[in-house]
Amino acid sequence: MAMPREVCAIVGACLDLFPGVPASPAVLAMLLARVERKKFLTILDGPRIPYGAPDRIEIQLVGRKMNKLLVRVRPAVAPPGDGHHLIVWEYTVAATTEGMLAAIVDSGAVLANLKRGLCESCAAAEPPRKKLKCAGLQMCPDCVLARALGCRPL
Ligand SMILES: [Zn+2]
Image: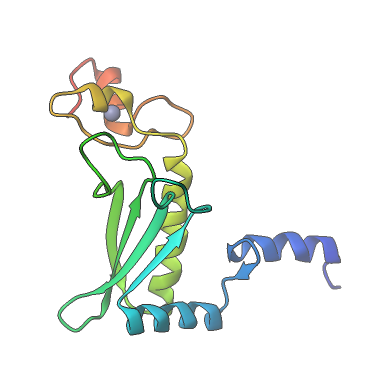
């Protein structure tokens, strides 16, 4: 028995890289080919803003044999003095279609966390640190743990 059309639409939406862009092998191969050709891909999370780019994912080809993807998430608004160099998250994955899928899915989750903002406790520390808040909390995981244990954050 086939699934109802409405259920297929909901399941299909969960398999999108971005709204309306399916996470198909062809799309992932096209994105990987783009990164291999240009060495760099930026995916904006929203329209351009007057003072620069919005929150964004940057995927760069790196490695001795250019076989890795360096994935970074940068916020739109940087604290004064940090300019556009602030990186809230980065990691490397293999330069394959599977790596591209992991890069987009993982960094998409970071973009969702970024909308919660940075931990104010860490920002007030000296020197200031930039860590993302936990889901449903007003602090980063380190500050939550430190407060629970009654000690200073790392
Ligand atoms: Zn913190």
